[in-house]
Length: 323
Image (cartoon, rainbow, N blue to C red; front, side, top):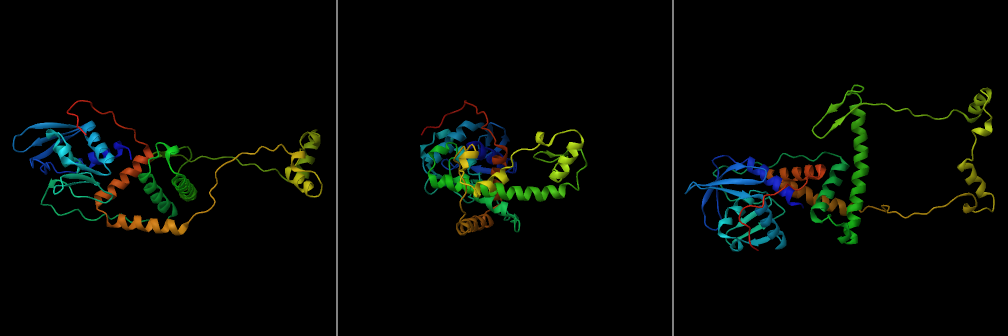
């Protein structure tokens, strides 16, 4: 998953933190507050000294990469002394947790604890409800899970089975999304006025029309054209259907009358619905048991995938973390 997605999620979590909420650094146990959240940095203020310190985005990314390179676990004693606040702030992300007993920061699939000092009760569980009988939702959830587990930046590096899974899920999402899109379009037709665009959060739609033509009975058409002075030979052509019928009663081969150009392509042969349902149920159970923060993160990741968010330009100033 690109760091930009995790960074945007972290910034959104920070925006929800109360102004008087305090965090604690895992090594020195100093308390501090988040006093400013910017696109490329987070400014914190330490309670004991009043010192203001900017925490740069590029250093968060360095810590993120260290965790990724260490199979989801990074030892905090490998951080420079002045980098102590970084894991505390990163722990506000739903997937990162500081384990002070082992002095490590961990990336997990489920929602985690934070270094936030608060007497407030835990947030209520998400009220997210699965749409009933909507196939595209189930397939999209499976596709998102597969995309999270694979690095799709280089498809040639993926194993064949992973590519097959991604292709199958994309095909199912496309088919079911098209069916659902048509259902939505049928309802929208009654709500849209001609040539008047209607805007939503992700785009706009407009009612329009198209002309479809089909020829009348062949003899009627030919007779009409002949009456207008057009000879029927000018508008008649070889009918492929009739040619195929002729081939069946002659010894001619297909290549005698057709130019044949063969090409290869990938086609979905079958879908293992049992495996999909088993995996989907696991995802549903995990989503149902997750905190509101994790559900919000999934929503943000879906939006990130839809909008294809680019990496933000990072600052190069500040102390660089050492591996």
